[in-house]
Image (tube, rainbow, N blue to C red; front, side):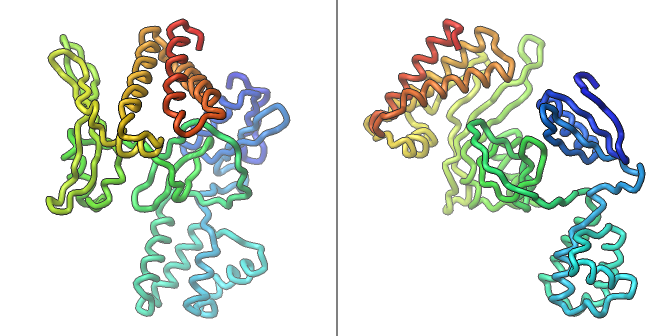
Length: 363
């Protein structure tokens, strides 16, 4: 591969070294997407990516191993350790001596066959637990021990890919499953309207209760459209979710932005009456009702900055990210030493200054 200091194979592991951290991270992502197990290590000035080659030597994939601890705890709780067949008794002793923390999937299958003999003595909770173990057994999920947790300063956006019903998220610089991170997320869903979206996510197999849908802030509807014989993609509407109406058993929402197909323009129907801006964002900011126009002024300035970037054909992700970061730095500097009452006016000053710099290409 390009930019490699070295690439070699050690005992069934391909080692790729580079000074380019981003390249190393992308390689880890690509190999994991392709189904390989890979890790990245810092090695002086270099980043080493280790990719496991299955079938080489005695290496087994991590996804072929299952943590032993929950199985042992289940056996102890049900008092079944001494009833294990002789070929499986070594598992208990090795676990208690700290010699074994994982078992192979084949061994787990034998354990499950043994446990099924006593299924008539299990509670509904026990059955549910074993079903989860069976689901894990048939999946290719790899479970690894977290060695350490380090807090690092970070001011960028966080994107989570959620897994329904498990409160799990895939995140991190290198993909990792996270439990109940609590971050707000953006997600995509196939639906032609807000009503269709609600129908689908409240019906089997998703079954999200309507009463929980007010956790959504807004829904954007996109569609492919034809204009002058060319297929384009447009945001048909941006809809604010107000909440659940118990009397009507329905979700109340407001289309604050709509697309006009005749003129190919967007109409801001929610100007002066936006629920999110006035009831949520303005409340968090501490903006009083009499000064509610300030929040719309801020939205207008942000839109002008984006238009300037479009006019200047600044489309590269990293360039846009760089501009946005500098804008927030300007605002943060201006906010130092300001009182809460001055906050919103200071934000507007920062955005106005940023807009001037964007126009002059100084950001």
